Length: 190
Image (cartoon, rainbow, N blue to C red; front, side):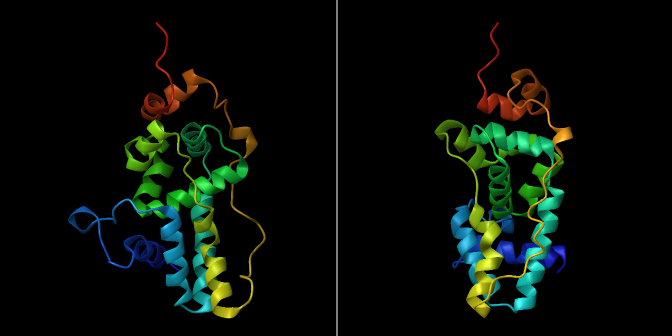
């Protein structure tokens, strides 16, 4: 499966039953991640078992490319903490946001400060994650074949622990993620 076909399935799920696209025909409007995941199961279940396996394999590549320490720090800041599984679920949420949002977040995790759901989370305290996106291929494969999705067993890629820095160090957060720091930390005392 190539990148275009992978994201085409996600975009179709993001558009939903009414096919609504975002402004100027761009990415679809802010969709609820669990709904996107449920629609993705429908999209994938309409394909062949081989296509579902290929989509899931490509998802592993996307998760591998997003296994960045600063992205984990952004998830930690946004969600008020972030375990290994929490980081996976956060990246599932990112996939549900679409290709552009995920690519921008991988290149510059601080860009998440401009995402409407992140801005809302800053005021509501909502946690951003979507384990259902990570399980969509498995659900579709089971629906189509009655069997479990064959997996490599490796699990989602994560950064090495030697790359981590103290995510509770507010000065370091302000230096590395200044826009998110404005949203999620108290202003420095003067």
